[in-house]
Image 1 (cartoon, helix red, strand yellow):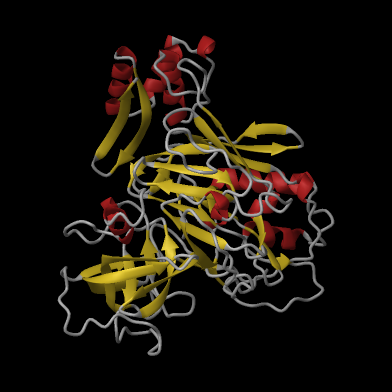
Image 2: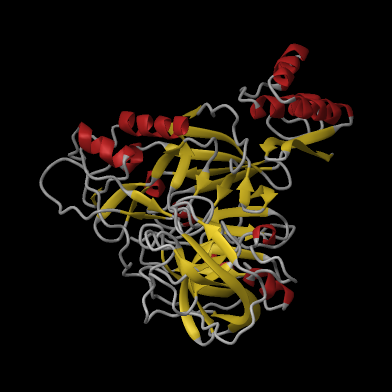
Length: 520
């Protein structure tokens, strides 16, 4: 069995990059575990555009774990991971242990900190201690426009050495673009780089767009500060009628304005034209850190174990790997252990199942985000293929960076939503991912609406019961569902029906169980 891949995460809340041993290819039929952190040959392509404030990204999920962006602080250029799972700008201070002496650092000598000591620990066990300083931070767009604003900067003065938070190999720090509610800096606004761009009017909208590209693509990845560049939505020019966001085909509601947390209502697999729903685990999206999230610095796609196993089973049954030359051990390594296979491995992508996530829409309805085999089996640009879907014991989904290179994604903090459109190379057979959205009328089955039957359907979904049609909903069903949820939520559900309100979601948090509902 090839050695397994370990996970490294620079940002919160889970893994970031994959690291592993290099195994020389041989004529055996096992899968191989290989080095994923190699420089992509397509990193430095720059294109000139016109309307938005877009900036080229380097790296990517199977190259550096996250997409990297370049910024300047104190006249030094830093390459930092662009992370939608955190909010702070974190860079190394001068003299930081386990960091190269010739790497860019922040010289805090003689400068006054704007915070006391701050520390943080990441999922891989690395941690740091330091302070915040106010400094001018600048990014430069592809047209040479400088976006420069005073920003609170978290400066690392100490870090663990094994593992280190950053050793300068693939990045020099982290730039978070999540909500300010999880910013470590608690002083006067603006509390983050993105907020500083908005408050200074350097960008008009409090949102960011990603157009990531896989390592095997010759196209360039971009971030668009303010999400106003229509050319990044290359295949679909339609716009959202309410806020005129180019290229977005469907909006998912953000259910927790901290990370970009979304409500995954269903997961389904489509094979040979037949679609089947995957049973979600008990306590779905309940508990501390159990929100499903869209996260640019979780390298891969995490599914609840039952869903990942269903996908693996469907891939095996599809016959797509029958000519791959892998024995049973090799198939297991490839599909279940993050082991790589040579890029020339014969895979019939037309037979692979489609994986669809049904997300609660904004302001209502649902959004269906569908990945094909071309999206969940990806190359690293250095001759290896990976099955980039792994199981998680936590009852949620993490749509990681490999999803960002399958779709055009807009993170809209102002309206608390995430938009999905057709992504990089969508005009070729290399990216056949799809997005559909439905804005349902009140009373339609499956919609969050004012009718009691629709509220009951949401109740059923929240406790793991399959939604039923309006005609099949009965008082007994409702009582059964109410008995399966905490009392505080059951009371709120009854109130919602009586007051003609609708449930948005019901979940457990550390301070107790809260039900959130909105007037119709």
